[in-house]
Amino acid sequence: MERIRNIIVLLRGQLWILPLILSVLALGLAYWVLTFGPSLLEGWGGGELWWIYGGDASSARGLLSSLLSGLMTMFSLVVSVTFVILTLAANQLGPRLVPNFMGDRQIQAVIGLFLGTILYVLFVLRSLNEQLGSEGVPHAAVTIGSVLTVVCLFALLFYVHKVARAIVADNIVARVAHDLHNNVRSMLPETGEGDGAMPDDIPPKAGTVSLGRSGYIQVIDYDRLVSVACREGALLEVKVRAGHFVLAGGEHVVVHAVRPLDNETVAAIRDAAVIGEERSPAQDLEHGLRQLVEIALRALSPGINDPHTAMAVLDRLGAALEEIFQRSLPPTLLHDPQGAVRVIARRSDVQGLSDAAFDPIRQAGQEIPAVLIRMADVLGQLASIVRRREARDAVVQHLGKLVETAEAARLAPCDRAAILLRIEQARIATSARLKEATIHVL
Image 1 (cartoon, rainbow, N blue to C red):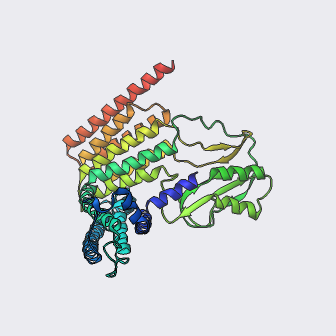
Image 2: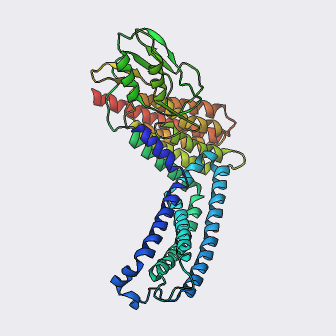
């Protein structure tokens, strides 16, 4: 399922797939209307309907030619605006966010609507000639072409509204955060069992396996690794995870078995990992966090200097971590049907996720009091809802990092005092939560 999900994620980022589908549907519609149009009009009352085109072949060719010229002009405008938006997104927010715009279903649908309408009009236009009488003109096809052109006019208006909102930083942050929340819900269960204890009878180390290819790990098929380990009576210790960049060689999987693995088994272990040219959110929890962080870092750069966008990112990061803290992380010990541990996986933990979210922003905004104060506020809000010990420890650690940053940065005394006050308030919230949890346990 994770391999399929990774393929779906990659396909969603392709700009051409939905326009291609809509273009094929438009050609199919043109063929169907030209073939069955006369019988369709008979069922609707023929030419008695005022909105059905009733002219001859010459006027139909002139009408469709004018519509085609206007459609080509509008489509050129849509393509030009799309390139402008992609350029602005790459320069201001980071090139790694371009797939988010390319994967927008509404943008793809508008482009596909224009392409499909153009192909439809071309297909109908080539079927018209001067020898057709008034009865031979495909009135239904010409009418549908006119209707599609009107729809394209309104689609162009919607597209302008869409791209105008798309370049607003807060809207972009909200969309990336929405995708992150969806990934968290799909990858992390609401409740789960703990990993349990490590097995005592770990077989001796029989060797290591490299993945044999350099690139970013997109997905690791742990079910396949469990099957391989069961078949060989081995225990596999995976040293890498989705999101890591690996070289072709290295100790990526440590094999614990009574005998070395053969070449077929090594190939099966390598096939369990999908390696690509870029990171994928299919199995990588940090992917969405790093996209939000990249927006904040761009906003805090001297060339842009937009602390408000960075603070909006901190708010969204806090909401994402809240959901992560309330869910169960994927297990690191994977068992076979008999209950024996077969795979020791390397997964993202709470500390690593919080580090990926807060450390880069804290380092980039260490001399911007508003950013540090907002980070302290977000940590304080998290402190009031965390339940697990590892989540609480992560919050406390980041509060300590904030104290060190505020004391070492070149800040006005009043700004430093304001930051330390917010940090102290967050620590009080953490202590209150700890006392509440202790009373509940007792």
